[in-house]
Length: 367
Image 1: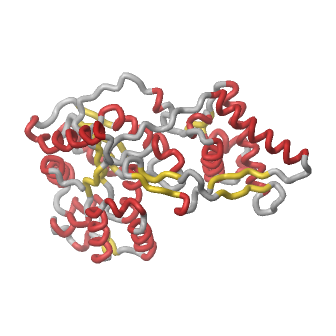
Image 2 (image 1 turned 180 degrees about the horizontal axis):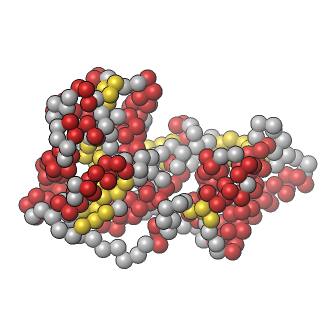
């Protein structure tokens, strides 16, 4: 994250100020741009009690000579997801579930791993200590196999217990106590989320933050982790300043933007704490490629996986309320080409920071 104290005059930010005023007005009305309050952190006693209830169910099953099983909401099915404009993607109240059985060859290992991680979480919460997901993986890396296995089980447990993941006393490698940040102060006019670290570093090298200050700039270095999303949400809830994304004009960039704005299917059970539906797409827009006459040799043909991803996004429920987004994706599909942000360097080495972003911000070039 980067910030700076000085920049262009007040007249430069007139359109931004009007945009912010409309966002604040929508919040007061409780309209579609309203910020959801989010679910409260569960207390340690609540987490412990939830785990104890699950263990009691296992003991009861064994006493009845029945094979115990975990019942987990099916987070991989769009049938279990609903869309609300003010929140994003959420799990429906009564979604389909799946059983992780202890007497099935297909699921017995996962049952054992869930039980193991539940016991570790119980000890962490009981002793008021914390561990990272990486710490948990390395307690028995051979047993877990991969970090992804641990990550997925932790998400399943969070969903099963109906508590935010950070209430489990499991952190990630970047600063973990986002909700513990206090006394935030800023006079920033906007928050810019940059998809890639390379672009973020280039903007810093071009002194963009100083030239466009007051502003805040954040990057999740690709697909954002939980705490990057929590930080963006925290900044939005604290200041209600316009939030923009700068992503590649390709299906992968659009997917990342959708995660910030509407959330992901796998974390839909915690959408209130992670999404910023008021966020806007600043660039790189597919329509910008033609408008700016970006050379064709700076573009990249869409692959079959790209086309599949694009088709998948176009079918999602939130696209119906984003006609301008849909049109941009249709332009991409029609051209069969995609572009990275770096394609703008074909116009000039500092075109992004000197011309493209300042004009977008001054004249309201977002959708």
